[in-house]
Length: 114
Length: 110
Image (tube, rainbow over all chains, first blue to last red; front, side, top):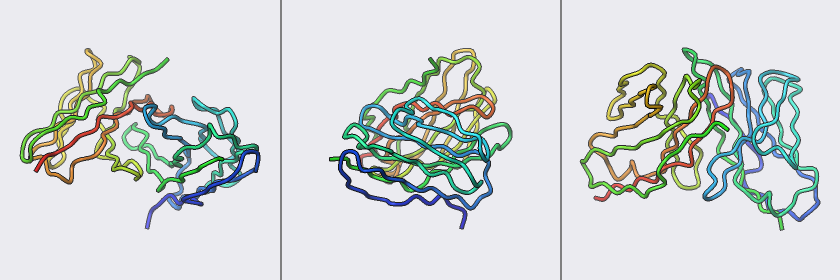
C-alpha cells in the first residue's frame, strides 16, 4: 500500500530533550516536506526536500533540522524542543501530475513539549 | 508574501444541498490549485486539483478556477453529513511549496 509513515504518532516530552520524528514513504517520490498545524494558523511548512541531499527552509524553520540521506526518509529533528513547538506535525511526499505537485500526507504526529 | 485566503466558517448547509467553498490567492504566478479535506485530528486528503480556467468535475465535487479574479471554489452537490470537515485550499506553481489557506469548516446538518 502506497503510504507515508510517521513515528511516533503521539509524544510528550520535556523542554530541551532532543527528539526525532521519522518519516518514510514507499512511493519513490522525490519531493518531501514537513508541516505543522496549529489552531487558527493552518498548515505551515517547516522544511522541504526536492531530492536526496537537497533541503530548503519553509515558512517556519526555526528550532528544526532535517536531513535527506535517502530518498524514502525525511526525519524531522528538534534539537532542543520548547513549549511553542507543541503542535500537530505532518510529513508529506509528492509527485508531479500534469504539472501539479500532488501531496500525500502521513497520519500526523502530535507533539507536546512540557 | 504568497497568501491563500479562505473564510473560516463554519459554513452550515442542510443535507442534500449544495455547499460552496471559496478561496482567493495573492500570487498571480500560481498555476495549480488544490482542495484537501481534513477531518478533525486526521491528515488532509486530496479531493481534487485544477490548473485550467473553468470547471472540473469529479463525482459530487466540482472545482472552479478563475485566474483573472484569482479565485478558486469547490462545490459539493448533494451534501452528506459525512462531508462535514475542514476544507483546505492550496496553490503553487510548478514544484514550489504549496501555500495553504487556513481552511473552511463545513457542517452538513442532517
